Image (tube, rainbow over the protein chains, first blue to last red):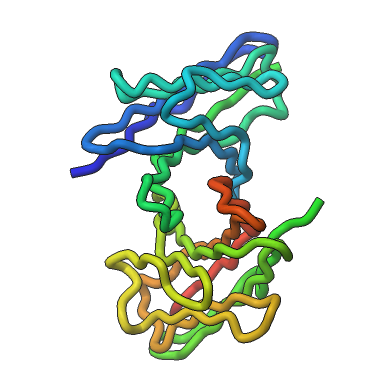
Amino acid sequence: SQKIEQNSEALNIQEGKTATLTCNYTNYSPAYLQWYRQDPGRGPVFLLLIRENEKEKRKERLKVTFDTTLKQSLFHITASQPADSATYLCALLSAGNTGKLIFGQGTTLQVKP
Amino acid sequence: EPEVTQTPSHQVTQMGQEVILRCVPISNHLYFYWYRQILGQKVEFLVSFYNNEISEKSEIFDDQFSVERPDGSNFTLKIRSTKLEDSAMYFCASSGGVTRSETQYFGPGTRLLVL
């Protein structure tokens, strides 16, 4: 069956360091992979989208890589700040064009000052 | 910046009652979605909607659920006879403009509690 896995344990890092979050998937061939941020009790906020034919995408302090051979995406936050503390969700969008997003369970990042 | 809005932010209802959750998608978007998130669990897809029709629905979206775009701005999710297990956060999302866009923008959610 299709499965998306993210680091289940919380990630604790020191301010200024680079946070790296992992998203692995199986039995799935997504056309797009997206990363969202979710704060407690709030809706997911879109961060970055990467297509299956793209290896890397950047936006300010954020970088996403997508390896369709390994079936893995890495999400990096450089020069992390306490305000980056949140849960980060990986989501896959199929090529079926109905827009159905399949989410991972999320990784909680805690950046300590 | 345009955003998706949802009302109410919280809804408490008795089991068996009907609830309607309302959403106002981003104005030039054409594709609309509902997701839900049970406390501590993943965000789960419920339904996608385009051109006044359901494009895809999940197994969760049974006969108790329905969606409607009653006018040019609102998008609603109705649960006809709520069950305890329907307690969750419900998120509306929208995407797309003139051409199909893959980015979905989510609303702040409605927290539904069924007693």
